[in-house]
Each structure stands twice: as C-alpha cells, then as structure tokens.
Length: 71
Image 1 (tube, rainbow, N blue to C red):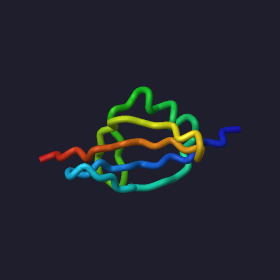
Image 2 (image 1 turned 90 degrees about the vertical axis):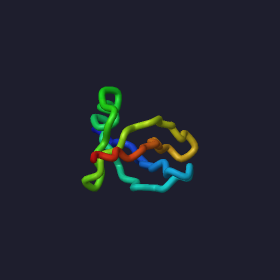
Image 3 (image 1 turned 135 degrees about the vertical axis):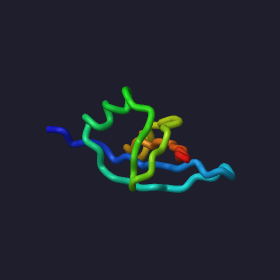
Image 4 (image 1 turned 180 degrees about the horizontal axis):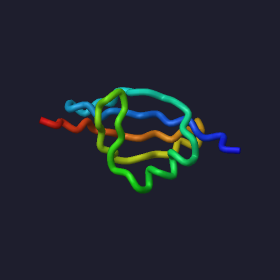
C-alpha cells in the first residue's frame, strides 16, 4: 500500500524570503517522479525545482521552487 508522504512546496521570493505555496500528501510514485523532473505546475503556475530537503523530525519532504516567468 502506498501511504505517500506530506510534501511542502516553498516559493523562494525575489527578496529572499520563503512563502508556503501548499502542503499536501503525495503518493510515492509522485515523489519518485521528482528524480526525472525539473519543473512543477501548481495552481496553473510553473515553478522550477531548486532543491529538496527531507525533514526527518516532521516526516515531510520540503521542496524549494522559483516561479518561471514566461513572457
């Protein structure tokens, strides 16, 4: 059974701060797919994945994202 894991998406703001985009449970298949992707679409906004951190204390995967500005 695929219990998944809670994933927190953080947006890196231009001034350097962080903003939580969302937190939700991802399946292990979605987490495994991170190995093959550089971009994530959330709320119709495309983000580039910058880095990830496994927070063992909280049992959560934290992803740092920067928005893509398609002009």
